Length: 429
Image (cartoon, rainbow, N blue to C red; front, side, top):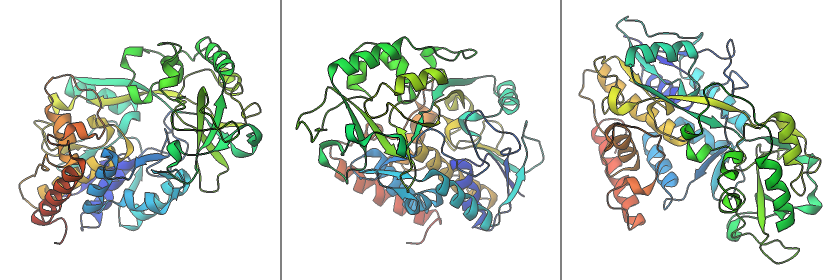
């Protein structure tokens, strides 16, 4: 029996690699570069389209604990991310092109068979299929899923612009990390109140690209376009992406009224991502508004922000606790299409699915992860929340039942997961 994985994103790449390295025959179906999505630019696996940051590695941060758990699982994606990291303070950020190229190289080296084609439906062929097409699922497959499931959801998502480093006026900006924690990896563009007012007015009155079916109520909070945040109130940006707290301008020894931060997009530092500037403004308007930011008056925009519709299924209604389609034991789902939110969360779901697909093929019972773990509690939330209406969820300590003492919660999680994986035969003791 073969395993067919649809989608070579973070989750799909992880599933394919984990199974292939355990001797399973895996066929990976990826439609890029033959057919591109609205947000992808290459045919490489695991291409990051929103941000190059994979968030914190500190264990007291939920994202950090999640990474420690993934390390126990033997995550390929995490391993390569650390190889391809770029300076970003406490965050794990990567050179996205090098990262995707390395993931592609390692997955293909593992013996995975690649088929470049669009999958529009899952055939009844007796094989196991893992749907890991992510938020940019093709229209034809999305329509097949909607027809089959009868209950699918979607939300709108946006990505931020990237600018050329040599187009920044460094006389008007400064390098620093919040509260001085880090290695001064962020470029900070300070604004006084007058500059902020001018920027804010331009932003809220700028023209946006029309999008069929757009509904602001379907925006996922963590990827909300900056113009939508701004429209909620003039002070909203000062408590959001332009918050100046913890940053002191060395030229004035004062905290600026507002701050726009830039983060390295590649290791060479030739490209910078404008942090928190996801947008659906028209491209001409993006240029006009961005050039109102001190230091970016002559900014060269290498990639404009874009917006797209993200697709995910209502896992609470249509999937079981193993991310398997109810009534169809050969069809699993992995990644953001399940309702987990975030790069590492999507990858982690791929590890979980790979574990259970492997056990299924060996005739063993499927296993749920302990809910004392970040992964286990996240997947339990997605599949078994208190309401039938699923909203995408990312790793956070609020998911754990007893997390007041985060150090103890993390130690309990890692000890429990290590024992679980040994007993499951996934790793040695």
